[in-house]
Image (cartoon, rainbow, N blue to C red; front, side):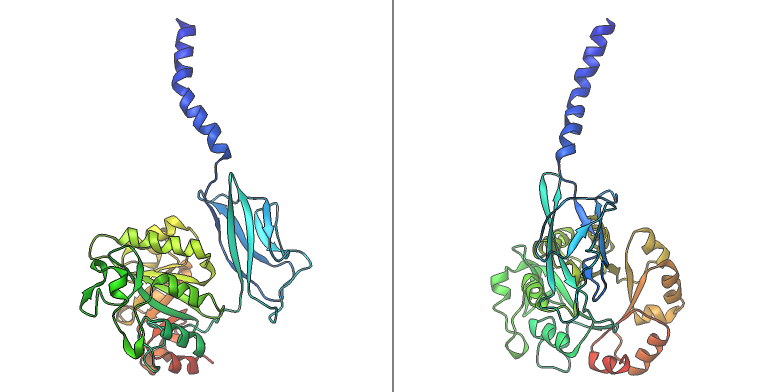
Length: 345
């Protein structure tokens, strides 16, 4: 009886044992906690490799197109000891490929020439320029004038394509209920057309000074998580993590982004969470209306203490800009980026 019992128990446990053995050779999602390369610093740390469980992981490097990088025993991706990247180096993108179980994980690293002037152009730099809001033209203008970030809004079209629009309707059509081909027939100001998020990525990746600030809109048709996944898939496809900041009024979207990438820079817009709550949910920043901040400006210091970044929207009055800058805000979103840029010189 005892032998029979042991045999039966072993047979019951066999599927789990086989699964465990198979898992040893399978890939676990691999994340890098930073994608920008410091300038003119020999042997500089770029980022650390983590799996989806948060464990620091060393992986063999299969390819390094520049020959500049290494992975340490601690799972640190860094420049080789005697290597540095000068500010005038040709090109600014570097690709490394890492072995991850049975698969390969490719990372695009970017020389860190990104502006740090706190200025986020709301829907791009459109107000004082020729382009439409949320267009490729307004992105180009935000880059041209030197903004740290260009904010834009994205919905999911009826056929599942992330497209830019602030409002749920554009040109009399519901964005979420209209296929992309019809949306792109709508003419915007100055001949612009409705761009896709993919087109926006490709334009932004031509430079390394201005970041993308992607606002994922709360869905009117229950497709918020589908939108989040679609946007994340495009970020992964083009390896544009170095350019990305994410914001949303939908807290479930924020949490989903952190689930997909624990090191994504995600900020919450709605104004109803304390810095401590955001920190507990691994949300990178708060991005609140000036009306929320003015009710209790001490939230800026509370956020700083909690290690949560701060942004205030939409700040167009020069006196308010001065006041918030003095209070130590990390970013300001504005329709008047030209004015704010003068103040932060």
